[in-house]
Image (cartoon, rainbow, N blue to C red; front, side):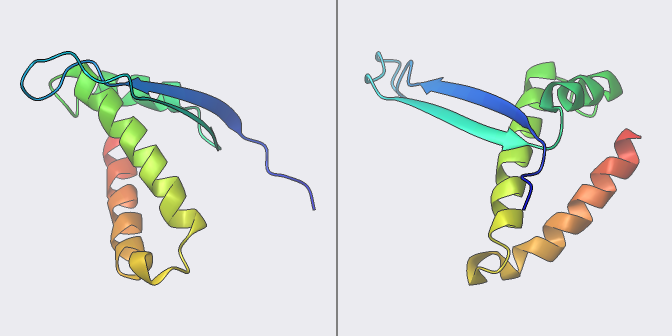
Amino acid sequence: MTEKRAHEYQIDIKHIKDIKGNAGNEQQVNLLFKNHDDIFKIMDMLTEKQLFENPQEARQFVLGLKLLGDVIMRNKQMELFSEMQPAFLNFMHKLKSKVK
């Protein structure tokens, strides 16, 4: 079976400050993942459509949505996602209709 073609991404997260403004701990996470979409293109599209007043929020939204969506779709058989998957698909259709 041939593996689906996908874009490959890397996200590095570092704790900079805690809730009190103190220097964060040394904790860091490096995520490597694949996605069939060009995430940067989607970020640009949502920024151009001005769905959010703040371009940074548009980028956060896209990144979070793509990460969550992929986990839901890969694990749709899990009871945890059984109620969420139909609502997520409806949400994605609505979002796509607003962006196009």
